[in-house]
Image (cartoon, rainbow, N blue to C red; front, side, top):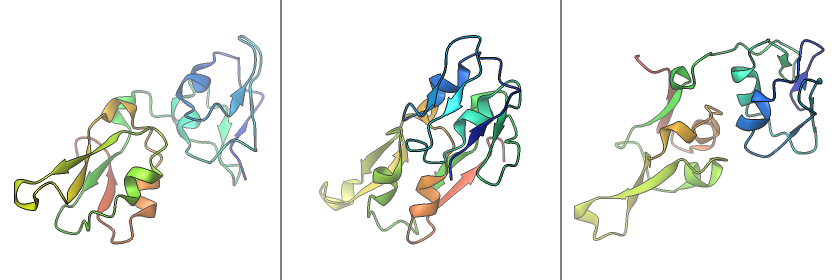
Amino acid sequence: MAFFITDRCIGCAVCTKVCPVGAISGLRNKAHQVIEQLCFDCGACGRICPHGAVLDAERNRVRRIRLRKKWPKPVIVREKCISCKICIDACPTACFDLDYTQDTDGTIGYPILARPRKCIACGFCETECPVDAIQMVKPGM
């Protein structure tokens, strides 16, 4: 079930800019809507909404985190990582790259958060990791 935009929406369109799949429609200064068929429940729209107009799939208001730099970011525990690259495939914003170590002849790469500003804190990388090598951590923790 998709996220939902309530009547608190004033049409500022901030959510449309952060949505990685274009699942939000609406005219400027008019209430916006989530296109259920496109929404994959990343929650970025709610974290950025200045009016608290976004509800999650269970109809709970999504808490705004005003500054994107304060959104949780994935931290990779390299000792646990098996270099399967599932996190890279799961990321909707392509914010990961592979870091090849010198001792592997370029055959084994470990994921690194190469573009942290692109990360929308969806947590898909953490959820999909088969060995729990990724944790979403709030900056400063």
